[in-house]
Image (cartoon, rainbow, N blue to C red; front, side):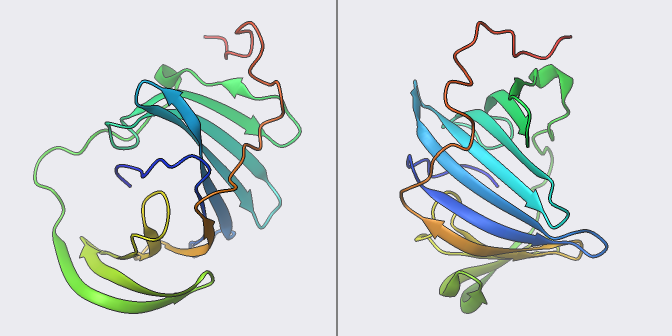
Length: 179
């Protein structure tokens, strides 16, 4: 999704639908700055099947996601958070070669559960995207591709807070996954 507008406390929640899969709710929250041009970003997911998870990412502000991720913690419901070594997961590579074709479609009204927006519309390859600068983080209001759709459910410029338990990160590093 590219660079993030990292205002501490800002949050956005989305409904993700894909044929043949349970609906998924995703909430993205920017936590207070970690200093040196970095910030913490939490992504909380909940499926219709009741599975809840959260990830906490330390992200460099000068790099797009996912290349800007420096640290990652994962928490499944009912378990303590663990640090996931980045060399143990496969993050998408930065795209090389020709960028995808972008066709700007102008300003369009779009209705999503969060309301009606007068949004910038574009087509990026096979995906239609609607964005509004008043929506925090990426400005994303709606996206629709042949594989899935995403719609803004709610958002706020403040009030976002961590779902990780208080004091979870006060250990001696033993929460790091073993190699």
